[in-house]
Amino acid sequence: MSKPLVRWTIGKSKQKSSYKILDVSIKQMIGLYSDRLDYCVLYNHIEEKDILFLKEKYPNVVFTKQNWKLFPVNLSRPSDVGVGEHNQIINGSFWKICPPRLNPVGHEIFLDNDLVFLKRPKAIEDFLSSKDKNLIIRDSNVYLGKYQGLFENEKQGYNSGVIGLCPNYDFENHIKLLYNLDRK
Image (cartoon, rainbow, N blue to C red; front, side, top):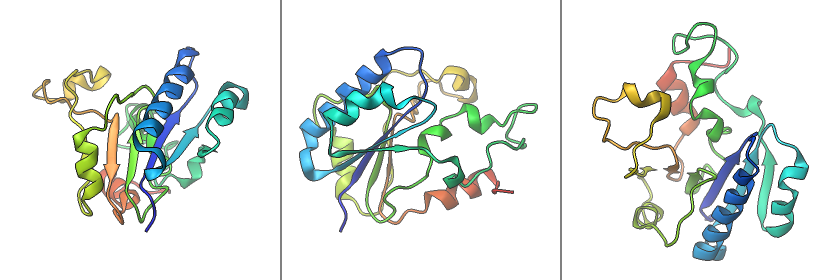
């Protein structure tokens, strides 16, 4: 049985503090879970020099450049989900989940790079002890940005900052079905 995987995604940022916050997030997760989990950072549109200090500091964390060919939806084509000539998916959280799974047979946790845990969250502990439940953590600080108007109850607190996928969950197929899109 494979270890659960925690993954972060970082992209181009004008703020150098993004890398420092990711550093703290990685440090905290390793401090809380040690070798119980595997760790991976996916990156896009950044130069190696920007994350070299992280690679050197965390030799047991895998750093991988994202490959958009591994995403099940063609993000460049307009769709009915899109706005004008732009595919709305590009402007959502989908860049965080490319590819949809790195560990399809084990638990996989997607974390925002600016999320820092001070203790093991009960929700994650419950998720890791389950074999058939996915996870999205409700956020007490509701900020949905440009998506705010899409929610009837703005206090729902949905957040893509923590997503957990259970073993053998076919997330790629779910994405295709949800958006009725394919790679054409």
